[in-house]
Length: 117
Image 1 (tube, rainbow, N blue to C red):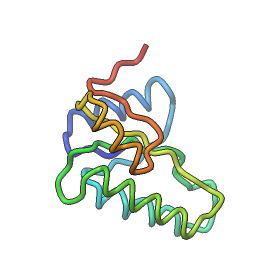
Image 2: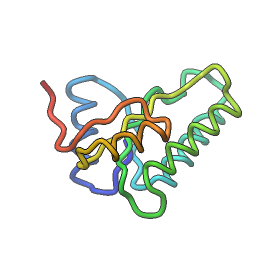
Image 3: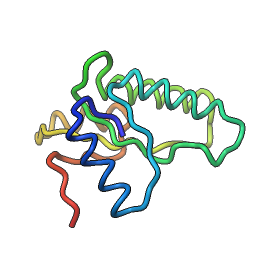
Image 4: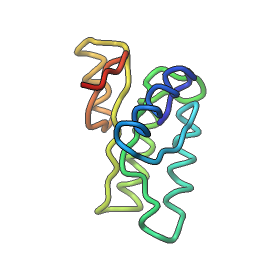
């Protein structure tokens, strides 16, 4: 889960833990996310691979778009047959913002505030 806003980070991780019983790793910006992803891939056992990334779009240091592009390029170069799903988290509910996320290789766009139904 990648978000620079502590409340949003806490909300998403709580949902993952309580509703979906998922384990997770937190990152506060896109560069942290890219580094965590690369570190996870360096582990020798395949069970450590991240399966999904929930990525905020607007963050300091490196935004979600650039992070998604870097992660996708790394996967294509190093893990040809294994792909991770990156899901955008954004408050921007417009088609150009959504398309920008999809063009960066994100699989889905979720709009904040997130609600579990």
